[in-house]
Amino acid sequence: MAINNLKTKQKYEQKGRLAERWAALFLQFKGYKILKRRYQNPLGEIDLILQKGHSIIFCEVKARSSLNAGLEALSPNQQRRITNGARYFQTKHPAFQSYDYRFDYLIVHGWRCHHLKNAW
Image 1 (cartoon, one colour):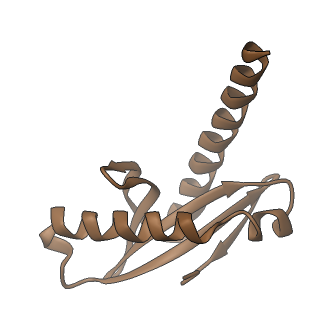
Image 2 (spheres, rainbow, N blue to C red):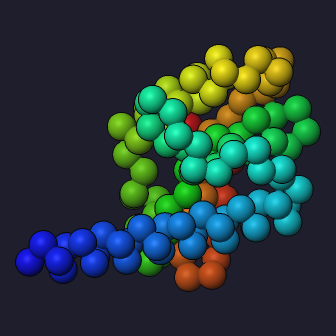
């Protein structure tokens, strides 16, 4: 039973990484510069940290079977974790102190990307 759970977890992890790569390409095509991917900090992980103009964007990426499933997938706890991780990033990168900050959410379903700006 444990082997099946491990295989399932690895399958979802692989799907998530592919979605993050696809989201990064999609956002680069829209003019965003990737600053960090899978940014690890003591408070958790942020999928993508981007820059566009004078804004720093912290982006959560979810791969789901539909847009509706994606809209339901981001929990308040995850939003709090990402917000705290963004504060940590700000303290470690003083060069970006004067930039505007926002939180985006990108849902990948199939080969489609749905980008929600200022999601919270």
